[in-house]
Length: 299
Image (cartoon, rainbow, N blue to C red):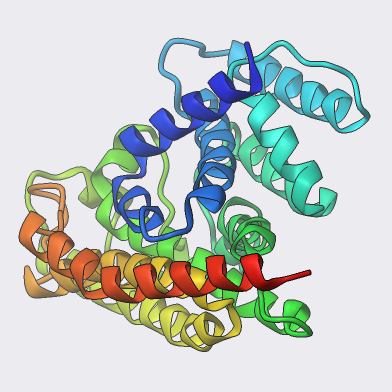
């Protein structure tokens, strides 16, 4: 598979499975988009192994093979894979930290055996690898302002945490069907919720109260992430503002629906998605023109 074809495979994975973020990436300069698609495509690739209903016991072997192939690729060996050439090219091009990649793969491996988290700190430990490092892997592509690279890492982490916790609240029923409960066990006990309550056709009062509590935590992560947008170069800000609004919109829909998350999958209406995209389109075009003008003027 050619490098171009690998980037296209990643783009298709992103378009199919990450629709909100994919829409936001259309606000990025074209040269950045494919690298964001590559990072998302790799994350989705690993996630599909973990969540596969057909691989059963072979999932651990498949994840181990993926990790070994990534290691060989990072060492400079050629790899035969539909997704990894684009991912490895992006990692090398932007000096994505190896520790972030290793932390992500470790979190994916834990998903094969860990199905409950006792405390929120325990859950945060998992989300560090499954979500926070996705934010920090994206950061070199999005570009922090000169001299702000380290300062921008924590807001990037927080945005990853906010997005994933939002997904956990939306996908409570789907995760329960897979045998996983991502809401902390001590929180379930606090609100008088049994794990089986998360698989019922309707959301009872106790579960609604639990979801409301966890939604408050997600809001805290969104607030901690917000200052980081201004630490990015101007051409990346419209994309991240739109993503912030789109994922925050899922949380708003959960709240608007009275925290009913079991009867149906919560979605942001298309008109609201379109409005969020349109709000940032003009700024994106202006930033792109300014970036191109500067690049032409450079000696």
